[in-house]
Amino acid sequence: MIDFAFFGEIIPTLLSGLPLTLQLAGLSIGIGFALALVLALAQQGNHRMLVWPIRSFVAVFRGTPLLVQIFLIYYGLGQFRPTLQAVGLWWLFREPYWCAIIALSLNTAAYGSEILRGAIQGVPRGLVEAASAFGMTRLQTLRLVVLPLALRQAIPSYSNEIILMVKGTSLASIVTLMEVTGIAQGLISQTYRAVEVFVAAGAIYLTINFTIISALNALETWLTPYRVRA
Amino acid sequence: MTDTLHILSVGKGGWGGALLLAAGVTFALSVLGFLLGALLGAVAAGGRLSTRALPSWAAKGYGTVFRGVPDLLTIYLLYYGGSIALTEIGKFFGSAGFIGLPTFATGVLAIGIISGAYQAEVYRGAYLAVDLGQFEASKALGLSRFQSLRLVIVPQLMRHALPGLGNVWQLVLKDSALISVIGLVELMRQSQIGAGSMREPFVFYIAAATLYFLIATVTGSVFRYGEARAWRGMVHA
Image 1 (cartoon, rainbow over the protein chains, first blue to last red):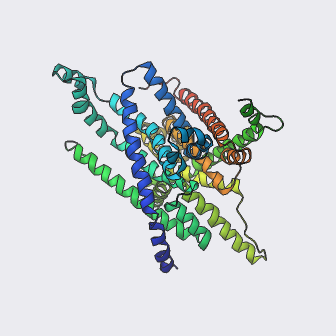
Image 2: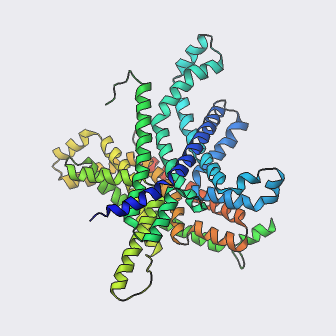
Image 3: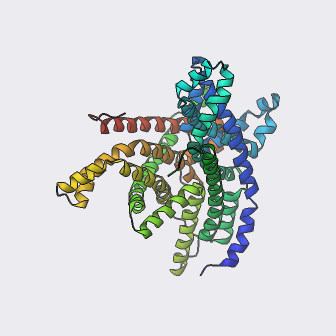
């Protein structure tokens, strides 16, 4: 019953979208993580002038759909073309590719900063006090004590966020980027075989996600050699 | 500024009314999808908790697939897959053209299937959080399995499930925007229509974002209120 020849035809076509999917995911997860770390650290000082704008940013990006964010950045900001051209940013907002990356990065930065904020606050206070009794500067404490523990603590939650981002890259197809989901949609309307295309494209995503989860699990185990895992 | 206000006004020539109506569609779509997801999630959680291999594997597969595959892909599968099947049936009865599935029902189904996969994990975790003594006590009281589930376990399980369900609800609300791709005029689609016809995309997408944010905030506080009520009289950390 299973038409292997058909799968043989569509899988290479779908895989041609894989580099774009991986690029979108990799870049936005990377940029988003860097931004998330900055936002999480900036909130540690409890300066109202810093915390309030960050909290608002996080609330807005967590409280609205990613699709709206992509449309707002791609179509919405396009309305301000003369201004953007004047400040020399038009090349960025003209391209659906960069707009998708900006939207995905800001979105994951908002979610990621909450994960990292929790993880940093979860580092026992005694360790920070011990570090300062040891004569470490604040930067040294952060680099050698707080961040290594917090980042390890954050791995499970952050891996969920990474999976959501990989899935989120599929929305880029709505702003004309032909990544795996965009190609799948084209194939479905050409061949009228939705189930087969879904299975093939779904298998590609499951493989990506499975690889990421396994890698992060291995990383976590490697970083916690003393903990015997159930 | 006055232009913007005029575009978004509720009266004649304004899009406010249409956007509010579309926000209502988004809300209805999300609620129905979430409820269908609760049903599917409860069944799947039962499967995961079962000691028999088949239900356990089926539930695990369901969760892995629909939590791992982009929601957009699932929506395409249901809409095009369903429409193609419907068109074939139509052909059999002598209809010539393409028959599309009703978009609202497809949206509810898609959100139900996707959110069910997430809700299953929430219910499973909550079930396992209920104290074992409660199961033993209800057995000792002579309650049947169904009675103990209905009268003892589920009410306590909901306490643990509410925070997780609140998260899934937020996910559902935002996922509902994706149903716009199959042509259902909910909030996202209505904003696209307005943005296109008034050539003011920024205004319309800001309006859409604001409405989504409002729905998310108000319903979020409903969940927090529910949580506080569920735990009233209980001491917990």
